[in-house]
Each structure stands twice: as C-alpha cells, then as structure tokens.
Amino acid sequence: MPFHHFAANLTYSSLPPEVLITLRRSFLDTMGVAAIGSTTRLSDIARKGATALFGVTEAGPARMLMDGHTVSPAGAAMAGAFTIDSIDAHDGTTPCKGHAGSAIFPSLLAVADAETSQDRPVDGQSFATLLAIAYEVSYRAGLAQHATCADYHTSGAWTAVGVATAVARQLGCASEAIRHAAGIGEYHGPRSQMMRCIDHPTMLRDGVGWGAPSGVTAAYLAQLGFTGAPALTCEGEEEAAFWTDLGTNWRLVEDTHYKAYPCCRWAHPSIDAVADLMARHNLHHSQIASVEIRTFHNATRLAGHEPETPDDFAYSIAFPVAAMIVRGQVGVPELAEDALRDPDILRLSNVTRLIDDPHLTEISVGKRWAEVTLELTDGTRHTAPPRTPRGDRDLPLSDAEILYKYHLFADPVLGKAHASELADLSQDFDSLNTTDFARLMDLALERTPG
Image (cartoon, rainbow, N blue to C red):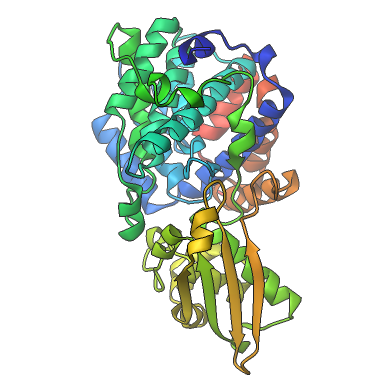
C-alpha cells in the first residue's frame, strides 16, 4: 500500500491493540520527559527563540509545551521538540538509532491546539490515528534512510517525513497532498550529522528541534498546493523493501523502546551491568579500582569522563556508569551541577576505560551490546556477561516502571495533582471525547509550578 494512501485512509478501528498500548505508554513517558525538560536552559532558549521568530499566524495560536505562551504551530513544534530532546530519556527506536516521539508529540499537539482554537476540536481516537501514522511513517523512513545514506543522520531527518505526513492528514489533506507534504518534509528536513554531536556535545542534540517544525511547515505548504513529491525514503526503488508490509506489520510496536536513564541509550547496557555487579557482590564504590567497558565502536566515542554540562552528560558512558556505582541510580539529580562535580563519581569516571570490541560492533545492528568488568582494589575482577539495554521488547520496562519514571520527572515540576491528572488522561487518551482531550492538552501545554 502506498504510504500516502495508508495515511489518508487509516482509521482508529483498524489500529491493533498492541499499537494502542504502545501509543499510551509513549504518551505518558513523553509527558514526563517534557516536564523535566521544560526546566532546562536549552528549553528556555528554544521557547525564547520560538517567540521571537514564530509569532501567531492565520493557522491559529499554539501553546508551547509545558509553557502556555502562544506562537505559531511550527514555533510550538520547534520549542516542544527541543524541550523533550533536552533530557535524553524519551522513547526511541533501536533499529533507526534515534527517536520519533520527541518530534511527533509536540508537532501534533501544536496543530491540535491551533485547530481547536478555530473550532475544530480533536478527540482521542483521531489523535491516536495521527500518532500511529506519524510513528509508522517516521520509523520506516528512518530505516530506509539508514540503509541508503552513507552518513548517520539525526532523527530530525526522518521524523520530518513522518510529522509532515501525519500533520497533512490532520489538516484534512487528501492522499496526493499528503504525498507532497512528505516530499517537502524530506527535502527541507535537517540532514544533520549525529556523530558530530556525539563527538562534540552541544544543544543541537538529535535534530528533532528542526525536524518537527520542518514537518509541520511542509504540511501547511502542501495544504496550500505546494508540491514536493516524491519523498525518496518513502517511494525510492532502493527503499521499497521497507514499505511492503505497511499496515500489516507495525514497526512502532516492534521497535519502540523506553529509557530507564536520562542519557544516550548506548550507555545503558553498561549502566545496567554495573548495577547488577554492585548488587550481586555487595560492593561499595570505594572498593572499585577501575572499570573496563567493552562495547561497539560508535559507543566508544561517548568518551566524556568529566562532563561540564547536561549535554556532555547525555553523550557519555564513563560518567553515568560511575554515577550508578557511586549513587546507585542515574536520574535527574545526577544531571545537576553538584553531581557533575562529585569527586567520587569523577574518580571512577576517570578510571573507566572504553574498549572498541570488533565482535560487539559486528552484532550491534538491531541491538546495542556492552560487557563490563569491575576491578577491585584487592585485584579481584568481576565481569558481567555481554548484554543489551533494558526497555526493548525482549527486556521491557513494565508499566509500573514507566509510571514511576514519569512521576519522578513530572511531580517536582508540575506538582503532584497536575502531574497525576496528566498521567491518568495520558494513559487513557484515545478514549477521550473532545472536551476531555482539550483538558489533556491544557495539562500538557500549560505549566503549574510544582
């Protein structure tokens, strides 16, 4: 089925239960990350930039995520994507080595808010259908791009395609206009180099801060008659294999993972391994003389041993591993300045060695592998077997774990009452009528200080 026919004709009743379960989990998880992300300097700068550059337009006012101030839908999408991406804890897709929800949720919520302001309210079923379109097209475009492009592009490159497709459907476009929206989004989306930001961590992050508004803008242009098809990631001959089972096999179910820790997923198997070793052998951090991490090649480039900013922290392995050894957790407190200066964590971070392992590189295609050894001060060595991160379908985070993570992030920012109501509605969003979905948007787009 051509992707634009899929997007134009998909109905809520055709969504399998597993798709809806995944979307509900992603809604909850993303709102928690957005809450804590709204407190970062990156998010503050993005909101100020959106206010300066993307004023309210004829498309209608759209509130910025967890903020409440209005800009254009493209501006709200940009600010929201940067907000979520400022804390590296949102859902992702391991085969694409990236993230979709961080672009999709702020984009679709921004357009829904603008549409609602013009007496075109949204209900939960229609929003679930749009989310399914955006995720599925984004994931498949990402797989196609990774298979056919030599460079490793950020998620903004392929989420621009999924966002454009879903927003075009959201705006009532027919199949051919949706096709052009995807082409515009792909052509104008950011082909930013992911490894540049890993080698030189900054606020650029995963490219979704520009992929989201690129997709939103593409859809509005296509609605007006702007042409841009074909999107080669969707229609190219080399890419065709990634679309043959569209609508019958759901990549968003198979490939969506959830993060236990607010840092690059490439660090997660090592963090999980040291947590297990410390507990199994009843160790104290003072007993650890050194740490050895064997992992795949690209992960060894996450080599920041003394991160100075949350951006450095996000793209490091040694430091979050050391934080787990010292504090028994890698959470929001470990992003704070006092944690980045903790002498115990810094000591262990600086005696952590990353080893490029050819075998783990070879098998780290659909998974990300690492093997960790702790050497004690008495010379004893404890090695955990090679492992992949928790959060994939084979090692899933439970609903209880995702809810706990949500409240850990959201309660201090939003206040417990606000956060709890947002959690309840997010976990049941697709059953909401237009009035209740409007309440959900109010909770997601406004901010009540905790």
